[in-house]
Amino acid sequence: MGYRLSGDAAGGCYPSRRGSAVLTEYINAAMRHARYEILPENGGYYGEIPELPGVWANSDTLEACREELREVLEDWIALGLAQGSPIPPIDGIAITVKLPA
Figure 1 (cartoon, one colour):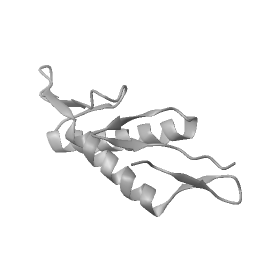
Figure 2: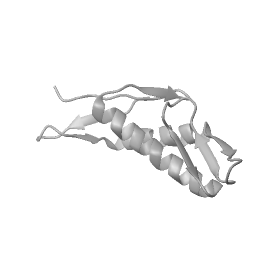
Figure 3: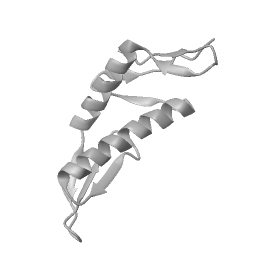
Figure 4: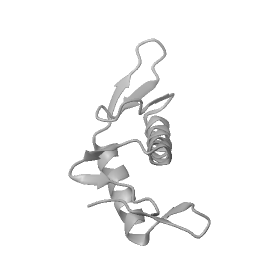
């Protein structure tokens, strides 16, 4: 599976319909890998996705931490795609970029 981006006439990129579904599958799979801890200092929560460097969040409640972690993951993927950085596969789901010729 892969995430394909198609170029528009202005040279930009946009996700294909199939790519959007794969992106959602990837995010859901990555969130299943999330690990959470209760912070001893203030009782808040820390969450991370160990396979994805730099993807972590902390918040006062577990639900808020999950939501923040998902937002961080989405931003991390968008930045990686914009910079052409490789996105590690999760559970056999890969995000790849096809740039305009």
